[in-house]
Image (cartoon, helix red, strand yellow):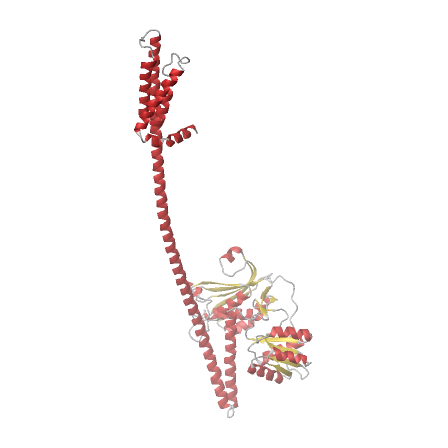
Length: 552
């Protein structure tokens, strides 16, 4: 602390040391002042002629340096020897003490001058170091500013590159998206054109032979119906891939479902394919749409058969499975939890890594033209994801392929048994059973009305919800509301809710080709909802209407 204060005083008097003559003048003045003080105090300081000059020497040396301090010391010695000491002093007696005092004075002055010189040199070096530190600090700030500017420029360049890369990636994604859409639409157009060709040509043939050869006409109509059925299956597969198909999941026993499919699979796969089922004991119940699950299993088995040109073995296995957090973190859209897995394994050619990465792409197929649509695995994938499950393929070239379909475990209470028509129950209706058909598409409404009338029902019709509600106000009685879901102004669900408010006993059957979440949420049919997807045959219509009317 003391050294710091001395240095501050030293720095405060730096401007005085810039003028040498001030130091010498100050030495002269302080020496004269010291002599004056010595004269005033001669009675008190008798025998100490040099003592008052030390103050002058210290002040002069501290402020102006050792040279000015040396001048003050010389002046003090001269003044003391000339004016303060006796004229004739000797080395004996009092004279000897004066010599000793003079020697002490010289020694002490030398110490003072050496110390002040060292102090000045130290302070000067400190000042120089401080200036160097300041220069280095200024240089460092300049370098930092330059480096900061360089980093900012590099950062801006990097941001520009990131922006350019993001734009390029967005362009690539758009191109990939358009390529995928082009592949999808091209596949749809190809398959639909084939089916339309079957339908149009078959109807032309039926029209040609209608009068002269009814047998050929009937056969042509069957071909047209086959083409229409294939077109309906294609749209169902597209909806499955897009996860938009209406699912009606139930708690079911996978072992029972697989066992019930054995005859169908054996007949479908052919004689050169050996079928084996491995059913797990203590299998949990799963939660899935039974018809769609059967379709998925059938697709997987058919794909396995097609991979075995010379025949082979297909193993259909059920098992309990638990997908943990680690597995879910490494697979997209997988929730950890308990699942029931159905594995289909073939001994076919297997798939390479490139084919495996595209296996679920719509219309991607390794089969020859005309032997497959490329929608089988994409339908399975869409069904699994829409059901809250997962599908995984394990394959090795030359060894075969295993496809595992994971569907959620059902842990709820037993569901009520679904109403099933008794065997032999007539599907036709009676004139006392009245059905109100609400459909905004005129031709579809007219066809539905004609089919229901052919089945024996009394049929009323409305072109929209507003017209249907007007019939309610006119007290027209009916037993079943058969309504389209997607309609302008008021959809079928809103109409049904209004009808049930006014006529609680009326049953409702919905139909549509795409629900837009009116009666389907998260891909699942709402509970207690009866639904008939378009397009439908007269057999499907008759069965569903009879089933809904017979429900209690």
